[in-house]
Image (cartoon, rainbow, N blue to C red; front, side, top):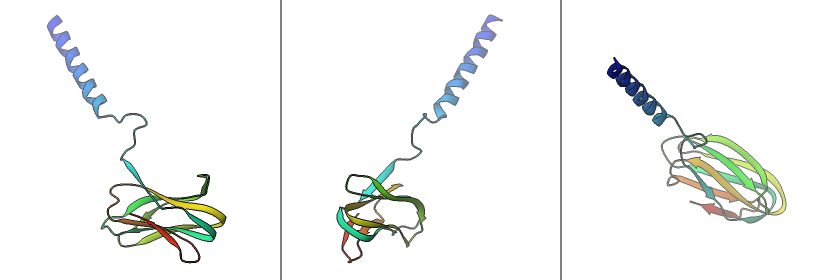
Length: 125
């Protein structure tokens, strides 16, 4: 009888190890996030952060516009369909401004830019 009990306990322990090994680690991201960043431009007026998806799959992107001190001026998460562009904008008053685009996946088929009202741009690939 003792052998049966030990064998049964060993199976339960092995089952527990298998279950624990497939559970996600607390706080671990589901997928590796990447960030594209534009260069900074002195913005005056409505400024745009634009991302174009040249791939064949939609991608969820968090658009972030940052001011000179790194403060978030505008932020929004939205899907970008294949072959399409999406953007956010904010009215900036003479501040050094840059854009960040946070997503999961490869940046190879994404194009990102910050654009000022006068047509000046800074791009990221």
